[in-house]
Image (tube, rainbow, N blue to C red):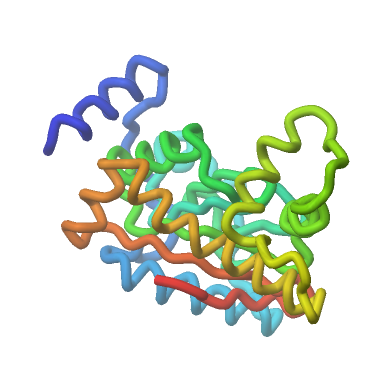
Length: 228
């Protein structure tokens, strides 16, 4: 166990983040490798798309969940109210560690959260989850060449999407342009996570972790992996 992991664990305890036993109710058999984690999510999404979801969160599962968690995968998902990894991938509570922020962008707070779930909770996979009709990406497209000012802290968020994903000032097909920008915005998060986090970079290098990106089509529910 390296020094960075030890520091993360110490910080988690200092902040009151209990290093509790792993819950046994997340899935029948937790994925043990990054590839198994991907396969579980792909299978769950297929069930969801076909309206054959199996996951449930009965009251009987609550004591085990209260005792600990063992999320096999973690997410950066858009804060959009239509996006829910637990539903989209047909997973019960305790199986996924989800961070949410408009535009599914990589922030220091998100990086720290993902470092915690990988180094302390043992998550095998990180998914950067974009989605169709993303309002944050659409706003970035609309404001990339304008002098109008967005209110509050929105410019700080939108700027992170504009570069490098919406620089084409004359898109020929607006619908395709939005879809391409959504994909770009998700994909670029992989490199950002690795560059900004030695903890995650080391886990990827050792084969203990994979980071992938993808886009969910809100109409069909289907999630498509766009980069891994």
